[in-house]
Image (cartoon, rainbow, N blue to C red; front, side, top):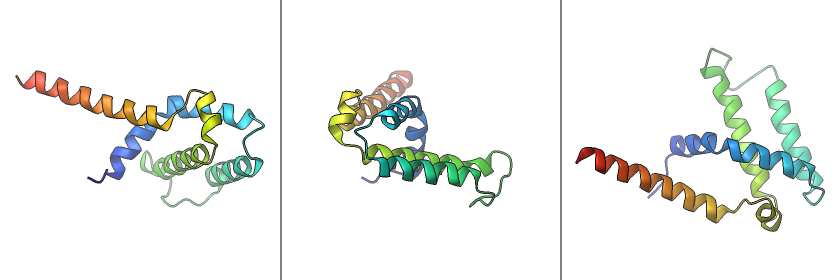
Length: 116
């Protein structure tokens, strides 16, 4: 079964409270490749400061492309970090997937109990 992009985006926004502090810690860590840090900073900050956007800056909708670039670059940066360093900071892809599955299962169970 394919996951829909809207669901992925919602989960990414929901997990920002964990990924942003992780990204700050990884940026400070000397074991993370400088090249990855530079690309992350250049693309993220560059796009946010660049005057032309994919979507013009209308209220609410204009910021969606900025958010999408930020989320994509956070994911890009974290996936290129060695897993040993991520685990040292308490980040495990397996744990994140299990947590997402538990959240989904808990929501389904709540819906079932409300229906009864």
